[in-house]
Image (tube, rainbow, N blue to C red; front, side, top):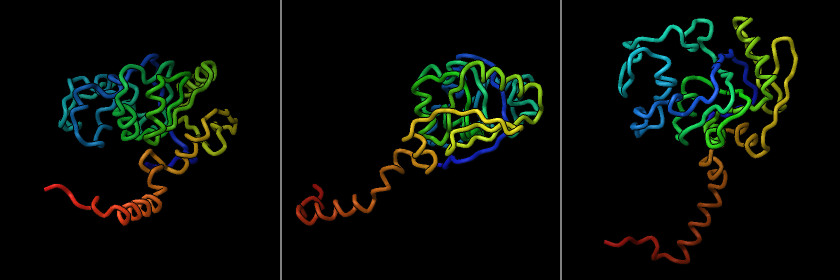
Length: 215
């Protein structure tokens, strides 16, 4: 998992409340047995005018010119600004996969659905909860200033605006530790790889029959 320490990125505004995971990555794209390739289908039903199906070439599709991520001023955005209850609906982990593979590193909103919120941390995304009034002011700034960017400083737990103003945010200590070190659940386990190997070797020496399998 990609570590998150300090990130500066262009902000894109998703000015809708209750964005559910089926809108983030529609159900037909969950058939894939791979964990990659979901970025082109992020917000598929809003992003394109034609119906999306797995295996399509995005270059052959009809983009919706009115959708925010298709507007030239937000190309390359890596910080998503959202409204209340972002990531509600089903618990599909494909939603943070699609957001991360599109290029987003951070999502800022007044609230998130619990399972989606947890899944973000496990997949290298930083979800930040801010008061609704603060989020509203950020929406105003994004709309008013093309190229509006923010610096997200996770070690210091602050968002730095262009004028140097800082907005503090909370993050649970263990989640912060995992993100800043790039540890997902597998990575956390592999920290103890030497101890695991030593234990398995010792167990096998005491019970060598475990090395045999039934024919």
